[in-house]
Image (cartoon, rainbow, N blue to C red; front, side, top):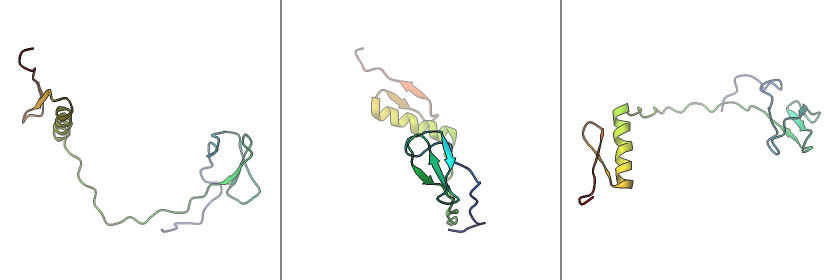
Length: 99
């Protein structure tokens, strides 16, 4: 993890208490990062510790719209058994014989 600069207590103050979701928060005297919730009377600290160094990995390319549609329709066909996915990626409804 790499620090870009020392943590700043005035940066991104919390909007709600992580324990009770109360919004009545005030800075506390415990340390520079402590907040006091007036609803549940808890004191908690919020501090940004840094960012992980990016690993040298390349994300997989996203599928094209047609590939995503084809994959989605194939999943639906497996579940319902009533959709046929053609090469174009559009569904062809099949009705069971005798209906």
